[in-house]
Amino acid sequence: MQRFGKQSAAAQRAAERRERENSAPRLSEEVPELVALKLEVEERSGAASASAPKYIRRVQVPSAPALFLIPCGDASCKDGGHDVTHSVMHALRQHRTEFNGTDACHGSLGTASCGRLLAYDGFAEYKPVTAR
Image 1: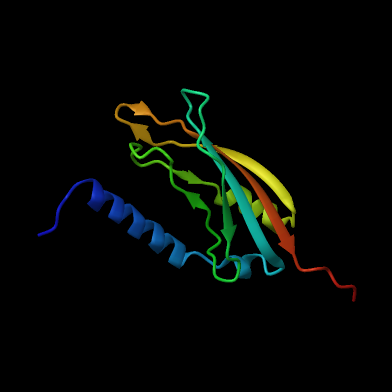
Image 2: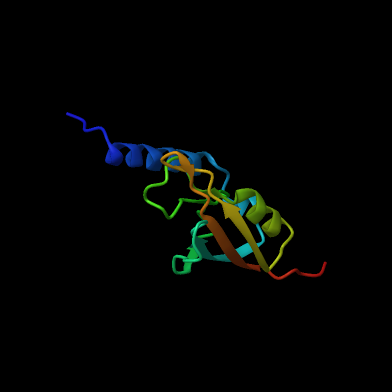
């Protein structure tokens, strides 16, 4: 018998995220010159100045999807998260070695909006350009 509740909703969201990742183009195809990518991520509560500790996400470039979805750090948030794909891919296509950005969560906490703010710093390395 299948149980319905938080676990099944969380499992469904994880399955949907995996499906999006599996169907997305590969990062190595979109930016073939990219060798390494590191994202330093920090999330802050919109209502308070408290923030979660910064963490580092090292992207496995050869196999990674060209998709940057970061779940909301608040376990109570419903339908939230951060999709920073557009801004990260824009920076990578411009061969920027350092970039940063922010994104507000649009999920909900009961009847209120979540509003947690994600800040990230990206550090990329590319293959050297060879003269022809």
